[in-house]
Image (tube, rainbow, N blue to C red; front, side, top):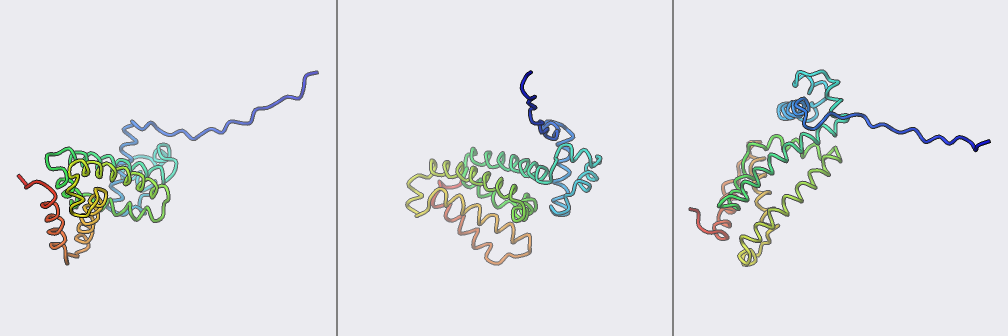
Length: 204
């Protein structure tokens, strides 16, 4: 007689997820971003997103099995758009000033603030924001080091420090302006621009 039958453990099947190139998936991501902008991220339920996208809720779950999956897709879409804008700034004829203009542009602030709020409650979002921010800051710092070199040392600032300074001041100006706060804004903007005038060649 042969030995006892040996049974392989049952394979755990992963839930199928729709293709990333799908037009329906893109429609869901776009609808989710609209809901977040208009009503806040807490309103981005599968039913609310499905209603905005004019699709059945089952399709939202098909493409995004969890809420984190959906929110991460929206963040990555926005990050890709921001990356393209930052890259355009960094490859322009006046990259540091162009980067400052990007950071002080209010057009994307509402969505950015929603993701900051999300990061306080969702670890997956917090981790992705941190990963993306570190990568982009390293890219910016590398370019500033190449462009400014010893002039940074003369002003006792590092390339990474300058990158953070532009981001922090620019985003604070935008965030406070959205809340109706303007005290000190002109002075802060003038200080940053004076520093850039000292570090960079004159504006053409």
